[in-house]
Length: 171
Image (cartoon, rainbow, N blue to C red; front, side):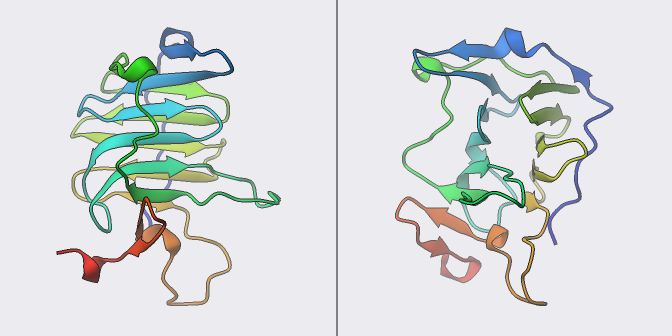
């Protein structure tokens, strides 16, 4: 099962303005986690870097967190990619989000916890989330409408060619 929704209420909030990046056509929040992940919050939230505890080796996670009424839905996903999507502006390292703190932007919040743990949620209360930790990383909640014992798409890692990499195919 996916990790439970994290409670980010106990984390001290930092100002999103301190992490705000303005490009020619967009604005987004960019930050680095204490364990070296590079994350971005805009219409989705995602992080690039050495992800641990994933179903198969992965270096990116993305949470779109669409509402159930969304017509077209991008999947919340772990990826193996050669083209990181969430690098800082101009490839530079963004400012670090300190342990014990959270940042909010739009409908998303992310927090950095002790022990190399990063958590991001969409909505309040959290309608969708991911938790990244050395022991176990996951995306929640379980995908709706799946038959009992049917594998959840969140339990797989997708690569740049959109092939599913499962636990058995990774050496």
